[in-house]
Length: 141
Image (cartoon, rainbow, N blue to C red; front, side, top):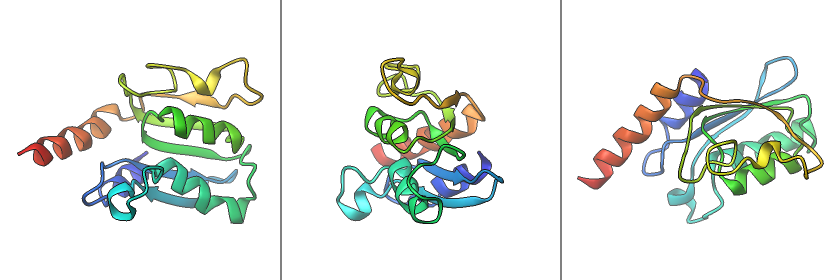
């Protein structure tokens, strides 16, 4: 999670969310932060970028991999996580407005889907929340 927080802090003008994909041995396969503002792409969320960047080295099925992300994934990202067959998702701050790993929805553990990763939420939530709080406080000034 500390690595994902460091990646999030590099987001510049984008909302500071960081994601890291770890291989079965714990080695980092890919890391990304949000790039929506940078690229003008509304789908450039940290999770999707990290999934895309890890897919080559690891193949597209990431069942033995772990996604670590600073904030609970949204519905779009949760859907991609399920489709990529990610084995484990670890996230920091809960997101009650858009979260799809237990807050607003629980896409990741929906029994109707063909894949359900292990989900561990609330890891270093204060640090992850502080990044967002500080960003939006400064952004609104």
